[in-house]
Image (cartoon, helix red, strand yellow):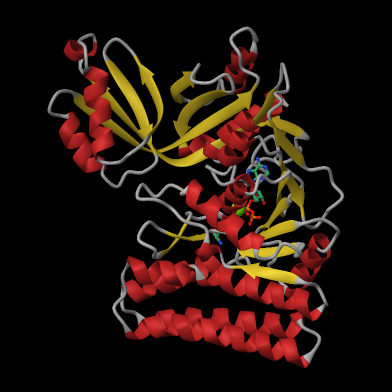
Length: 436
Ligand code: ADP
Ligand code: ASP
Ligand code: MG
């Protein structure tokens, strides 16, 4: 069994869906995970924001625009009347459901139900298209097996058990279609795996069915050595390790959802990143083998806040770091980067929802400085201590850029640096120029 995930652009128009249909109807048993058509989830977020504000005109305008787009897609996608009517009815029923929220109370529960509609519509239309063209595919409702637990982590036992049970009911079927991103939470409510989470769905499914391969089909020919949105002439990397890919995804390479590498790594299932528009390009293969003596790629993570905590008297005393970390823990705020000195410790966070309370608590035993609008730049490669000279090349590249924090040694694959957001583009370009 292979798992193939297609992102929003890959299914972003009737023509693109027809193209994806060609790619998935080759021989072999497959589970195909689809995102919503591109732009849909952003529109659904916009609708939810209007509904929170009780701005029904605003919500209706976006709803109608989005619905018209889907109706146009249906008219283009199907060649015969039977499936065209089925498609139009399907779109209408989902949009009637979305419109029902303009008459009701609106909470996070309703918001999540709305956010799920994009994947539900897109997969249903795609499956109709396969059926219209004589393929024997089965639509698997992700809400029947994809589930998170009380800590909002995937419930891997539940996913495996239920997916296996459902698949066993279709032992002859070769092609399954399911929704990325959406799930139920521990209370059985409709929920999601966070923005960009369809990649995560694919790797969780891959691990659950012990797939031979997980393919992430997107709009670029693999993981590049730098962020192509900021740097010209980036190159696709043919092979990288799970550890490298995980660091890049976590530190900002948008092509993969931050947590999507781990399930594949734990199950040792190779992940391929492939280009839907250029299906014969080799793309990137992510596996357990580590390329030696190489700097592989650079990524950057935005919206970072640095917190510097100073207390000359306390640092050398036992328990200072514990006290600091307990405060972050009590506000469920995870720390990305840490550096220490004799007089203090600097940490970074990407979620500043509880920053004020955290700083108040820290100030009970230390002085605190906060820097917002920071970016973590992360250089990934074979960075074992024996490989001399890489740090020098990185700092040489960044000699004109003010650096706020440096972190190395946490893993053998990563050097992270904290810089001001305004220097991000220059830093990424300078690193590409010097390193690759
Ligand atoms: P999808 O909708 O298929 O999930 P995404 O937009 O989430 O696609 O991810 C693909 C995009 O990620 C690319 O178009 C590219 O702009 C961006 N990207 C950021 N960093 C990288 C990188 N290192 N390599 C390739 N693409 C990257
Ligand atoms: N459709 C969702 C999003 O836009 C999930 C995904 O595309 O991976 O975030
Ligand atoms: Mg994505």
